[in-house]
Length: 333
Image (cartoon, rainbow, N blue to C red):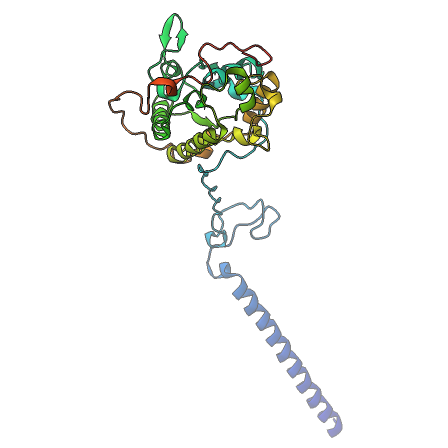
């Protein structure tokens, strides 16, 4: 064998050795990488396999690696209801919403029940009812028994209680007494109807010119005083955590009065106005769960009463809406 051939053979063998070593190194690095990526090859539990055979993913079977599962997403708690503000406008409900409702009020509410088209709910209204006499005047007769509105309210369970009182109290010169009497009434209603949503309805304004023409305004009605009462009722709603319905804003004209087309005597409302009233109630509803996610507020223990707070004698105690006033379908008395 020539020396030249031997040299070429040795050189070729060296190159093959280098290439072989390099290939072995690449294989070794690849094996190490796979070993590090698959810890279950070292005796650890593999992650759950999906139905398609890959780790994780939807439709996974077997036990999943808890460390791979994201923490539970917390549902944000809704903001608490703001009792200092009127009820917000909502999607309209149908009349069946009022199937379990009781309506406490005076002759205005009586007209509402007759001509609004509500056709359901319990009418616990009576002419001449006032907040000062709510717990003592037996203005209703049920099954032959004379009852106060609150006694009648206790006869069965309701899901909603609507209160519309204040017109007959405008002649009283005791705003503080009105506020205290209203707070007392809310406590009483909550005791006998603990699962009911209580709605305080703001007073709808009056038309003073029509009142003057009807009776000379002998009961000294004024929308200025009526607005004071509405402010007091808003405060009651905030303190007692019940719903305030701002019917005044829905009915008041630019002058702050009830438009003349809505009444004949300035106080009682015609059919069209009663229907407008119902439309407002149907678009301003709140659920019990929204109001009280942690349960309703506690009710103070009932103490002895000393008569109606704020009750006065003389002209100031007159009934502004008129005791015994009968209203025709067009709203006239």
